[in-house]
Image 1 (spheres, rainbow, N blue to C red):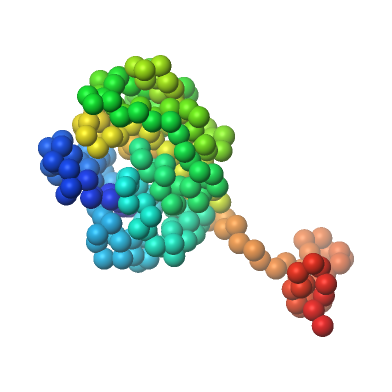
Image 2 (image 1 turned 90 degrees about the vertical axis):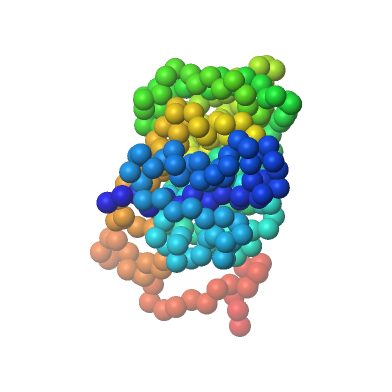
Length: 262
């Protein structure tokens, strides 16, 4: 069965900025759709200005992996929509967060931190060397020891995220800064991959190695199986061991401060 991938692209830059329109006339989301098509995914493209902000529950319920590219308009996403995406990730939906999506509500929610970092946008960009830290990691499959990007936006440390469960890539920039730019996290049953390169005025998403990393990331965060327990809060009145104390009646929640309700 094909992996069902929803590519969510804010898609406002392409309407407002002529330089972005020149680099990505088909939009960033459209470029990702074209670049990922050869990998055999079942791809759907949605944007912020689509109905229900492009993220209706019916679509999310069918999505195996959600790709997220956003920048200036993170605050417009409805909190109840973020709540549902978080629930889907905890249930096992994969999430790939690209570039400035580090400030997306959903990423900050799942990380529990500000996700702030250092940045510099040089007029013509600057060179980025993306080093493979774990060559044996599935996301690094088919990738050379490093990817050289002639034009990029500098994203540097300190990057206010929790310690990644796995660090696959580290970036070095022409100005001397470094960034943990390929980070894997687990939340509930879901896997998350943050991938830093991808500024809107540089053709980074036309680089074959970058597209290969994203495709590998999709396969990695896709839930391998659907059985097993979700991490729900369930009562267990019957103990696992025969003869152990068991719950015989329903207990109402305690009042704040530990005082039983009257």
